[in-house]
Image 1 (cartoon, rainbow, N blue to C red):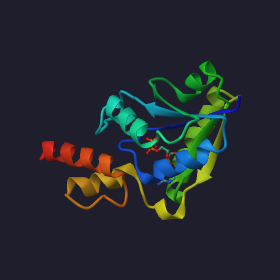
Image 2: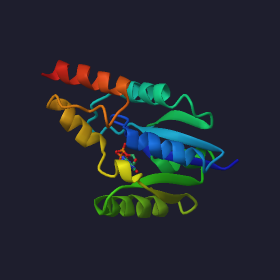
Image 3: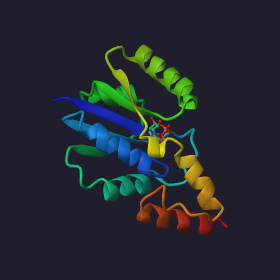
Length: 161
Ligand code: ADP
């Protein structure tokens, strides 16, 4: 079975992520969506909230599995028989970070390959951080995230204000 993992924070899930998942799912028998939990990082949504959003919005895809990843992606991949890490590239600005991550992962485990998919041009500007910034200023995020995610963002930022 040809398995891939698409790791990320999904904090929150955007249309850019969903597009990557839909396209990525066509490339593998099974695509695992690895929802990262890293104690060094500050998340807006809890791990459970981020997983719930993915489950809600990706239920139409049958060959994907959504799981929490609390360890190195390469270790998770090795344990679950996954050979490929899938990542997305938007602008040149993503390149340096992604090159560093892919090179480090290769050093950690030479058997796990990282492959990149170019962003859908409609979402090349879209990131979870920009969505949070707009939401925090009460802006319209309906073009960037599914309606239910938008609702959750509104609640989160009203709580903070
Ligand atoms: P991380 O904190 O691991 O970067 P993200 O949730 O921000 O997690 O992103 C996960 C992956 O999805 C990354 O490879 C990122 O480049 C990709 N990605 C995020 N937004 C988009 C988008 N709009 N188009 C294509 N890829 C994207």
